[in-house]
Image (tube, rainbow, N blue to C red; front, side):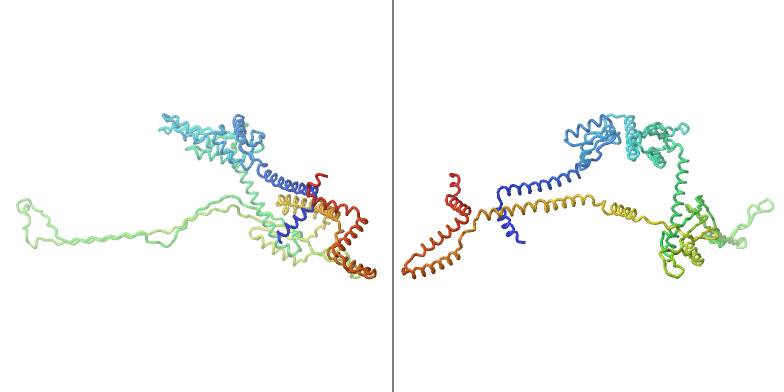
Length: 569
């Protein structure tokens, strides 16, 4: 597309319009552009600032007043709802929350370990202990408030002094008061979790020494054992129902292709579970002995030993044998061997824990529909009615075998399954209701996510219809009127040059012929002749269309006089 030619055509078209037409078209264009700008700005504003998010909730009256005062100073729009809930535009909620928190608001939200950010000179150990206790209580309260059902929480800890005497030791205790959101309540798991949380944060604190009450003074968590039993029972029932449904679906999936669809099969399965927890330990000894260690030692010694001196008391007995004689030496040899072998007895220790649920028995009941064929009359001709044909015994046995294998029927365990063939009641289907429900489902599934896009598409279609039905016909009509006015303003009696030349030639030939007949000479002026011919043509047109001639004269006089001439008239 040549935009230069297009712009030239548009400029020519614009030049042909009257002043009134130009004003109308300009107003229409400005109105459309303003409408589009308003639509875009309004939609953007609604998508950002039009949606409000919670800045602070559950504030005290004093904190709420200070927060509102700060929002007024910052020129931030806000909304105040019940329970002192303050909302601001979603796009600035985090920025404004940080800005207000830097001012120390809200002040009644509790204190934590930020108490130790500023150290006080000359603080005693008692002051430090009190600060630590306050900080610990505040941090625990903040953690508990993080739970969705809890609106406010207060934690009080009783920490006894340490003592060297075991008999005088006292266990720490804790008390918690929670204010719940209206219409909400804490579950047993959440109550147990709060107690365990506080007990884990305080040394030597047991969950049983944590007291939890609500704002109405009702003690929470007294019947923990009963609650645990009820929770366990609910878990067991849920597990049982889930397993039964899985096996029912298996039966339907296996049998449905053979009987013509899932709507022709009905299955019910009952499973008896053993939920008792069992743990067993067994030891097995290996009969083959294994040598664990072996030790051996050997001792040897050789030499002579002196003779024993004895006899009648006297000199000879005291002196003893004479040394240095070979006969006086007695040879001695000593040998000793010792061995120790330790044997290890092989032993295997195994610990077995039973699974969560053991199947004791499975019973299943399955009902299947039969077959249908066109009913024939006595002559063997088909009719419009359908005839029910039950399944054969062989078919039922085959279906029973398939269903048994699909869910794991064990006859040794006492499992039983029954497959029966019965005629299902055939009710007419309301196609109108079915089609409406399908249309609603299709709309909610596929069209609802694009609702925002459809809004802009609707506006675009509306503008297109407005252009086709209003603006385009109006513009065409205005252009037609402009063309008619142009045709009226510019008279079509101007003599073309070729037409004038032909007319002059004709007049000259006729005049020459007349002059020859009259015996006149050939001396005549062509310019005078053209002037006379044009003058005659003008006279003729003036007689026929006097209004056009008057308009032409007025236009010529205006051009010659150039616009000031009109102002003098």
